[in-house]
Image 1 (cartoon, rainbow, N blue to C red):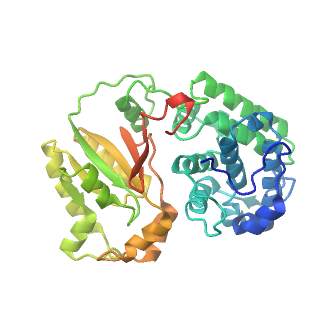
Image 2 (cartoon, rainbow, N blue to C red; image 1 turned 30 degrees about the horizontal axis):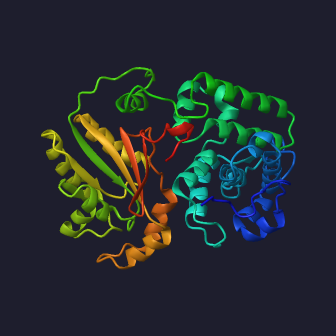
Image 3 (tube, rainbow, N blue to C red; image 1 turned 90 degrees about the horizontal axis):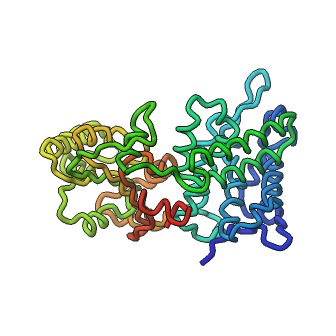
Length: 398
C-alpha cells in the first residue's frame, strides 16, 4: 500500500489544499501566530514560511520525478520542519526573536504527530517512512551550517546514517526559496555545496559505507577517528540492549528471540526490591549494573531489559558493556501507541499513563551511530536492521 500524507499535492497540478490542511491540524494553525526574525524571514510568521517552502518543493522538477510515496515523505517533512517553533520561540527584552533547540524538539513533535495522530486523518505511517520524515526534520538546518562546522565530514557521514542527504538537499533548497531575506542566493549556494560535499564523501543518496560494523562503532565512539579505518575485531560475546516504551512488547520479544539468554530486568528488580516506577531509581540501576558486571567479567551473553528511551542513557550502558569487550546490539521495540496504553492497563503493576506520555515525549529512537547493530521490531515484526538493510538499492530501510 502506498502511504500518502493527507492533502499532499498530486499530479498533474500539484496543488496544495491549504484550507483543508489548516482545518485538519492544530499544530499547523499554531504556526500562524508565531513570529520569526525579520532579518532571516521577511515573509512574516512561521505558517507563511511553511506554505512558501511547501509550494517551492511541489514546484521542484526533482520532487515531481519521485515516486508518490517519496513525494509524500518530503511533503510531510516540509510541513513539519518548523513544527516546534511555536513552542521554542522566544522574544527577549530587546525584541530579538530566537528559536533555539527547534531541531531536536521538532524531531520529537514530528514523531508524536505521526505516531499517535489524534485527528484520525493521517493513515498509519510505516515505521521506516515515519523515521525518515523525523530525520529530515531533525537535520533540516545542516546544509545551511555545514561549512561553519568544525568537522563537516563527520557531520555528513553521521547524518547519512539516518537520512537521505539528496532528499535533505531538496528539502533545504525549498526552505531557502520559501523565505524573504537578503542572503537567499547565499543560502541556495550553501545547499548546493552541501550536496556536492555529500557526493564527495559517497553518502549523497545512501549511508556512508564503513569497512565493518565494528569500524562504524569505533568511528562514532572516538574523536578524530578515520571512517575508512578497518578496526580489528577481537570481541567474543554479545550483549543485547533493549529499548522501548513500557507496554511495547519487550518481554514478549525476549521470550521469542532470546529464550535461553540471562535477562537483567529493571521491572523485575523493582518488584523484588519493592520500588515503585515513580520512586528514585538509583538503587535499581546500581543493582542491575552489578548483575551486568558479573556477566561481563566472564564474557557471558545477556539481555538488558529496560526502556532506555534516551541516547544518553544508552550511551552510558554501551560504554560499560563495550569496556568489557562486548559486542552490543540495540533492539528497539514498538507498538501502536494506543496499543501500548491498552497493554499497560492490563499489567500487574500499571505504569501511570502520564509517565508513558512523558517517556514518549523524550524518546530518541536508536540509530546506527550508537552500537554494532540496531534491530527494529514493530508489533513483533522485524522491520529493518542496521547495517544489513541500509544499503539495499540505494535506500535506507527494508
